[in-house]
Image (cartoon, rainbow, N blue to C red):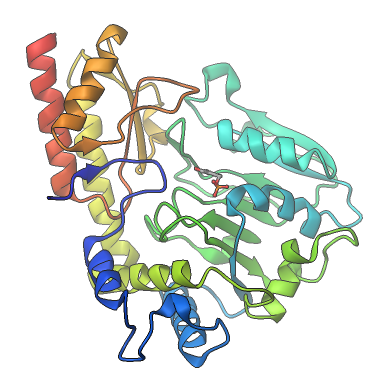
Length: 359
Ligand SMILES: Cc1ncc(COP(=O)(O)O)c(C=O)c1O
């Protein structure tokens, strides 16, 4: 059996060398007589792997020393609550930008804990644009500004960083590690692991240390970033196997040349696919040119009645998980780091062949 090309939005493709190492380590890790999964999280082995993962991630992203790296659980969705619980303090409210389905979920959760001021929304363009910062109506006394640098469902990505006087909080679930960022621009970065970091079950948060220790009195212990930081992500049992896999992914990225090298590959992949879509009248992508995501490329077929056949035939050709999100329909190809250029070439060849036969 051979492996197919996987364009899933998450849990997503993992680098093959990582899976191979994990397979080799599965029954016995480094001659220790048991797998890493079966070891105590307090053992020197697991602590060592966790420290190595943090160190490699710090190198990849250039994370300054005054930022804590936290390995958490509960997915990015849990951070939608953790953000207000940790940051609202006595401010009572925060600013949010609404650029799509994930922004909306963060906003809805934020409203459970405080006043949410939506500074701008692109809902009137069906989330195909990003409102320029000049148009934002910033609040007067916001505790932070939350935004979604890459909307996984709509395929809309910021190629600029908002400039605000309050801590900038970013849900980077589907863009983290796809290209270099300047961590010092942010108060908090968080991400579910299941796209560019590793398997589902691990959540990453990078928190500027001066923002720790401000959680509200009713913040659950497990959501308090300061508790996680003080206990080096081991307040309770962390997802050890997911951290181990993330460590392998970080090392794979480093070996590849780090994020500048990854960005060059990702830009080539996305550019090819957008060019193929734009060059045909059979396929279309609705997103404004300046905000087209490098990681998630939604596209529609001119004739919707062919959607089902497109999916059946693409799957038969070994191109998996191209169905668009249920809220928008059509197709979506997610081009995360572990999706090779070869996979994108195969997708484009299939799309062109399908068009020739059906247009
Ligand atoms: C941008 C974004 N935010 C949040 C989430 C929710 O993440 P989780 O399933 O880890 O809670 C997702 C999931 O796809 C996402 O893409």
